[in-house]
Image 1 (spheres, rainbow, N blue to C red):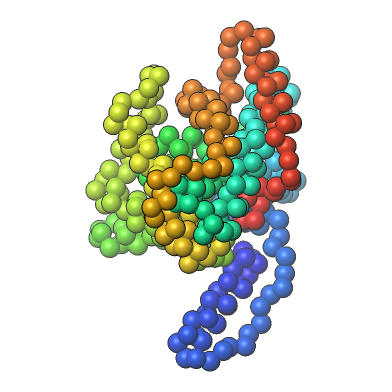
Image 2 (cartoon, rainbow, N blue to C red):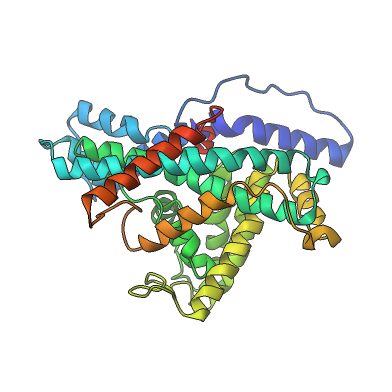
Length: 387
């Protein structure tokens, strides 16, 4: 179903273009004029995981249709995740739940933080991002760098903001959803980044694609190369029927391969600077380098076509690269975000387990609410709704 609804037109059109380029003849074929069902990528993967886990005898088949379909269509995470596993979520529908004030309070805090990331940061820097990517030739190299920087925070705050809202809402109702983001921009290498970014999707591909293919326990480097390429390219394709996503996945695989071929992909398993106010210089350099690489790759993710991505990158590297950019309005809120998440990097979210004077805490809550109200502007849908 996912292949027909989401990918039929893409592969049909790609084949038609390839045939015409090779043989000079235009093919006439039927494409589908249909609307993509809401959340199809998410509930398809959830039902797949249920079927596979039952087949593997990791989970007993459910005899309760209400619980099963509630698991498939659970409203907080239906349209943009996290992608839940039946072994985690389904049993929660089958047991009695009682209201827990402390859990609900923490859920509300996480919802508040999610709204801050979405409305105050993602939606507002997104306005700048659209200008940069729609007409890159109108901006200096330094401004295009700023545009790539803004998009990195737009997509992070947009998607992790939704995940915070979904997880917090579920917690109010007595459900525990899996953590979907673990402060990924504090990663020291690309392997650590992928352990911290969109965790529900990356672990899904690990468990249901990478490991069944043999994972890293294969006999030849060629097969290992294939396995890594498979999960990253399929991950890119999952995000949308466009060659930009496939190229984005392919480039991530190329960057990830050296570490897994040398066995260094799990080098940084701890939290950066754990127990310290500031991490060692080596960790800071690793974090900045990883963030810069991720920024560059996000250009392919955001661009409308692969050609547009290369045009954007080529326009960065001219003499205007060293000029002072305009449109710096989103920087103060991004700095606030980074400071708050750095202080909370060992927690589930930035507002978890806040301690200290109650008056100061409430001043913080009210300040975030006021920022959300002030920065609320033109309605913008969540980026991952399209996936």
